[in-house]
Amino acid sequence: MFHSISGNAGPAGYRFPPGEFRSFLAYLRGQSIRVPTLTEHLSERDAVSPSRSAVLTFDDGWKDNVTAALPALLEFGFRAVFFPSLSLIGRDGMMGWGDLQALLAAGMEIGSHGLSHKLLAGRPEADLLRELAESKRRLEEELGTEISFFSLPRGYLPPSLPALARRAGYRGLCTSRAGANAPGADAYRWRRYPVRTGMTAVDLQAIVQGKGWRLARRYGGEKIREALRLRHRLRRS
Ligand SMILES: [Zn+2]
Image 1 (spheres, rainbow, N blue to C red):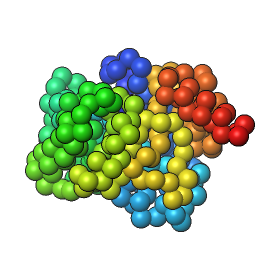
Image 2 (cartoon, helix red, strand yellow):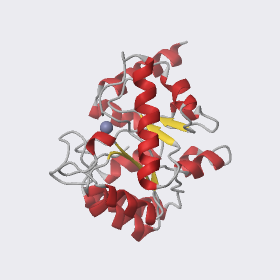
Image 3 (cartoon, rainbow, N blue to C red):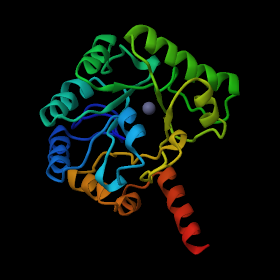
């Protein structure tokens, strides 16, 4: 899960430098690791081992995703999934509708990151359904393509969200819970590894090699610590 591809612009905790991004893509190509869209992942996930396949997602809709990430993706012939938040489209430093059209034209996949970019936990179901359905409708209207996937903003998955996402017509939901997805994993509770400021291409290689838990200790984050605790509990039981 990427946010901004930049050295010093973008959100303080969630930047990844363009040079490191390019190195990581070179590693994926060198290892012949598949880089599918979520639509492709959904159709092939039972056939491909998680260690041979990596879906690249980008949250929020940072402008540098188009200026820095897209050229590198095209250079390596990879595709990725971009999740803009409706409330951020056209803002300073963020993508406009033209940028999203350019991503689609380049073969990239667009999903929804909701309407408001506010925490969804603790909000009434009607609100959650609106975040899901209204953002889907507006993206589909503006972009003329089906929006099939939702990315949870700000972590903390409300228990009802997977069922509501299905009801709103989504085919999958990306959470912020750190981890890989085993074949046949619930598509409405997909895990992702957050890419944090300070990480390098070598760190991302470790994630692909199944050693992402080591990074979790170094880069912290409440959700990662929570996932670690759960893992330890499962090991003991
Ligand atoms: Zn976000």
